[in-house]
Image (cartoon, rainbow, N blue to C red):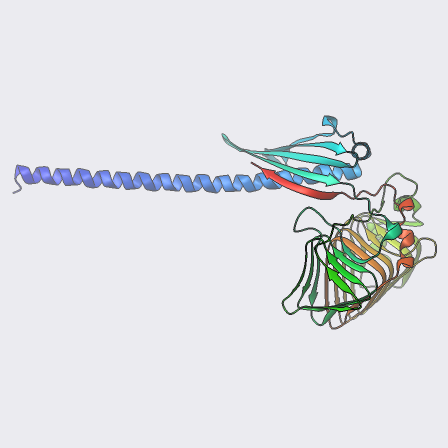
Length: 399
């Protein structure tokens, strides 16, 4: 039978053990609570970032497409009356943002997005600032065979070549990227031209950049993107000069073998899928252009009055296999330019330009001949007085 001393000792040990367990349990609960708070904070931070980014894009869209806001941006008079205030974003009652824009000079402005996300009593806020400019690139002296014109971030202004064998052969003209000019695992042959980049020229993963009577230079100054006036109210905009206008559905339903002449304007996406087509002039879309061909033929011939090419306010995506493609004029994407060619004869007599660009080729090179007379009418500033493009020159985040 335990003595009183033994009973007291057991009691003390029990209290110590229970105290230790209580301390450990409290620590684990505190740790779990801290981890939960950190996780929630990270989720809120991500949600707020995307809210702010959406707000920036909202204001950019307004400047590009709302006549009053656009004129204020060009005149240097953006003010609080042009602010955007929205709540219940994407149907989420906890999400809201306020977007302000103000000019520093005409055609240049700061956009400030303040996003707010609230869960219970917890409120997270994010501020994103970006500086935008209206590019002033002129077609009168456009000497670029290949051009990637994005500015303001590593994800913009790159021109990348991928695939196998020779991805592209260019004859004459300058190949320029406002960020990185990259040749990855393929060969790019430049005859009688130049390769320049505002950041670096990267030849990686077994890639080869062959310069015949040509040179390369980096870093160089950045170059303004070409101005293309797609759909402003000006009589010289492509929409107002169109000789034929189609809706997205009407253009998509054109039969194989269709021949189109003049300025062909498509409201929405212009899709050419699995059919032969000839365009004598310029194909213009106020959204994306998507061309997907297998064992088909596409011809774009420059017109003596309008010039030639394909122009998209958004993306240009060309994917061809075992096909024949000949494009005279300018291939232009206000956003991403993506070309993929396999086992095809692909010849461009003109120039190609995009905000960001990538060319992938295998079993046959894409040949680009710099022929300015095929696109001078297209890039003439007289017919592009109100190009809607905006370049992002600065991106800054605050918490």
